[in-house]
Image 1: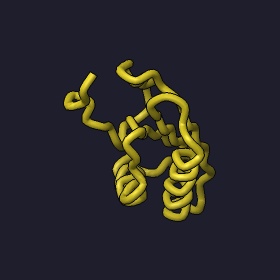
Image 2: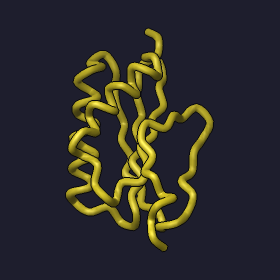
Image 3: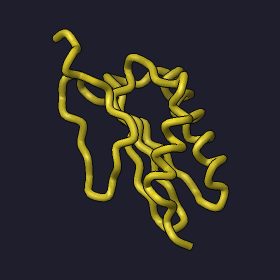
Image 4: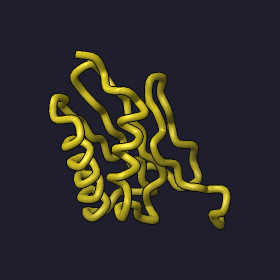
Length: 103
C-alpha cells in the first residue's frame, strides 16, 4: 500500500475544516505514511474541550475519506506569538493569518 497523495489529504482536510476553525486554532499539519495519516492541531494556549472535540471531528471526517488507513491526532498547545514548529515530511493544511493579530 502506498501513502495517499498529499494533495488528496490536503483537500480532505480543507473540507473537514469548514465550520470547525476556532479563533484559537493556529495551524493544522499532516504527514502520510503507507498505512497511516498523522494530524497535528496547534492551538493558542491550552486547548479547550471544544477545541479537542473539533479536532476529533476533523480527524473523523478525514478518516472517512481514507478507510484503509489508520490515523493519529495530536492536539498541541502553543504560546501565542511563537513560531509554529514544522518537521520534515509534514505538510501545512491550514495556517492562521497571524500578521493581522494585535499584540
